[in-house]
Amino acid sequence: MILEAAVLQVREGTEAAFEEAMVKAAPVIAGSLGYIAHELQRCVETKGRYLLLVRWETLEAHTVGFRQSAAFVEWRTLIGPFFDAAPMVEHYEGALRWPRS
Amino acid sequence: MILEAAVLQVREGTEAAFEEAMVKAAPVIAGSLGYIAHELQRCVETKGRYLLLVRWETLEAHTVGFRQSAAFVEWRTLIGPFFDAAPMVEHYEGALRWPRS
Image 1: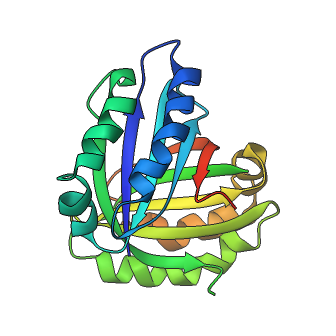
Image 2: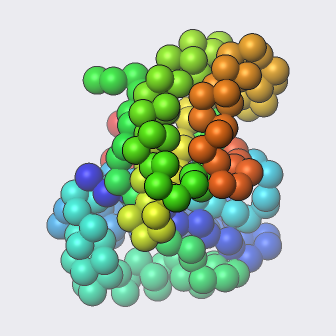
């Protein structure tokens, strides 16, 4: 499993509209092959800053399957207009999960 | 629920030892009041970079309860020597979780 971690900074005053757009956009990313789950987290310390965490079955499910799809165009059309800067995207692989299950 | 997100950069060549130390340190943080769960994620793009995600019941469970405890001293004694820079720590609150459950 791969974790995509994207730091998003949205334009001042558009936070509520951005969060609504993310609800609309959720089924768009969720329908992509190899998608597992995602969550949007709102920063406590910095207004307009969000952490988007997406779980993918493989790295390519995100970088190729989703990013090169028509769904990605739709996703970006819905949420891209809110960005104040280019998202900072990294991928991670699980090293430890606690409690163990 | 609060998500603590910490970006950790460990010294070159110490990755395996750091991951072992994180296994030893897991029960130390897990015993703290208000702790829910945590995961350590290894960056695919940048060697030695990790994302530590800790779920807390409240912000204060981390910033006061854990950070001002003897357990925090033990935690930092176990993992602090591996850090190549001060951890970058932020807190987040959930805005969206998908699939909804």
